[in-house]
Length: 75
Picture 1 (cartoon, rainbow, N blue to C red):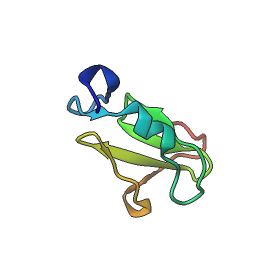
Picture 2 (tube, rainbow, N blue to C red):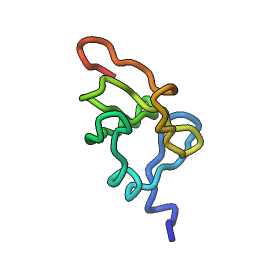
Picture 3 (spheres, helix red, strand yellow):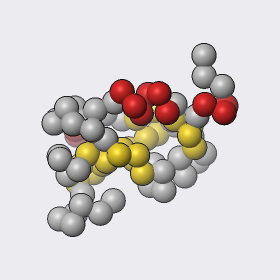
């Protein structure tokens, strides 16, 4: 069971993300690792050049919902 101390806040409305969930998620396109960007409330796939949003503490792992990163890869 997750307790408040076991979660990470994102900056968008104070939603919480379970760190254990972040450890097991991978990019649905590349199956590669994701980097958590707490400032933007996104999971970043460097390989795919996509940023997946986190809404109300739930990662939205749909390619159609992802934001394209710029050419420098900055989030």
